[in-house]
Amino acid sequence: MTAPRTAGGDAAATAQRPNVVHVAWNGGHRFDAGRPNGPTLRLDGSGETGQSPVDVVMSGLASCISIDVVDIMAKRKTPASRLEVTVSGQRADVIPRRLTAVHLDFALDGEGIDRDQAMRAVDLGLNKYCSVRDSLARDIIFTWSLTVNGEPAAPGE
Image (cartoon, rainbow, N blue to C red):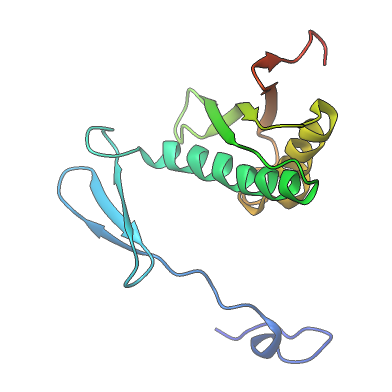
């Protein structure tokens, strides 16, 4: 297989290195995954000893967006003191039982955080910066809600 050429020349010279993970079967539906010589994560299709693969995708999505939210809020000089996300996913009834809709419920606390700025940070994380979201199927419906310093959004907000 050859690397495609880009307008700037050889793709190998300009492309980023690929992400590499190693996955090892650990019996049943259990797998340990991680970067070579790095920390590992237990995945368990039965959900007994670790998250299921779909749970890991939803966790990765929430973490990816949250990294952006934390960074954006810090740049606005209103850093988060707490950020938690509860993610719920709807799956197709037929195989493959892929995600069809995902809802993320953000709870963000921090001194001086402005609701509009926090909402903008979540929107940017989800719709502009998160590479995990961009790696998922385009027809998945994403929705989200936000509670700031214990105050949920007003209806219709």
